[in-house]
Length: 231
Image 1 (cartoon, rainbow, N blue to C red):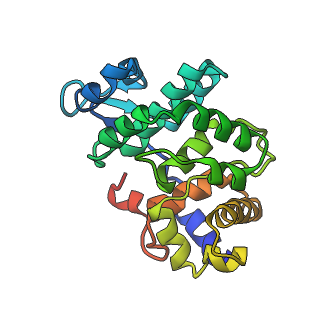
Image 2: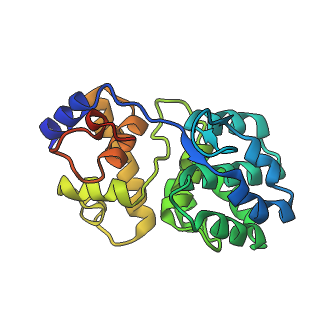
């Protein structure tokens, strides 16, 4: 497997994760009633495409995380930004699901406690504690990755969504086998530690490897999408 991973890292070495386009006009009605519409100012305005569209990057999430600190309203804003970044213009359900989360009375407590768990290195505990309306693993692991501000030598949280799963499965790596259990919190923590181990051996960061898995979406032996103009 490591030989295959090294080949894909080499094949995609010039690919870079691009900012995500989003449409503030789509999100505004879902956020404005809850005082969160100002999050739509995140990122930068697009220079092409429909007027009013903006671009938000992973770096923008890091900047917002550092600005909001421990403020409960700030954590809510960061979560909304994560949902926007994760949805872009392709997930039409993102605004509706985000509104469902804003309506969930558990939101502030869940964001605070899962952030604390992630920052203490308890990724399994964070997984067990994240229960909010409208948010599944693909998005709450994005939240974990966004709030994890530990040093780079830690096994920092990573995103685990369907596209990453497609790539893992294509490699014949299965989380339940690696973890020795069907329990998702343990499987997630095992995935993170495994990815960090692989990344260290390959000389890349774990979030770089995670993005390559997302980017390739299970097509591990084909040409890199960047070579044909893919995002």
